[in-house]
Length: 214
Image (cartoon, rainbow, N blue to C red; front, top):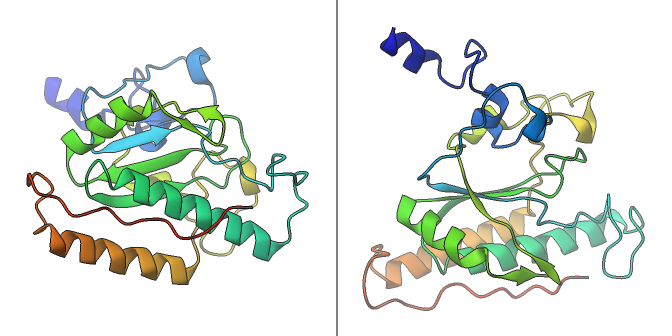
């Protein structure tokens, strides 16, 4: 019986624990959900709810929502993504950074960061909960999500999701190809200089952001 319960934990067959929370780290029912949201005591992944102020959905930096043109919106997002990536690197090696492009209450502006080590994620979580970003307090928690292939909407990267921003799976907002390449190269250089051991006492400076936000 115990083996069976363990095998269905967090799946749709599990009638006790919420499969959406387990897969995505967020659930549209929130505290009203009839199933348990089991918060992990340790994880490689942190969640920063509602951190990204998406100019497509909210007023930002002097622009009314939806008034930025596509080039401005991409530049704004690239600056945010680079800024956050460089900041998170101060706590340890970041393996994946995922920003939600959804417009529903439980996913809008959510940011997930998966670190190489669990202690790096814990260190980031502890530090960021006392920080502010863009004039707003940061909230951070450990997330059960470790496989974003399950968390992200598969239709969104294919023929298109009919639910759009209101889909209950993550619609991932991507940085520009140039920025993605720059961050990959700068992170490789940083890891090489520090000997790929983030627990080393002597550490080289983390990558620094270069883009300006709107």
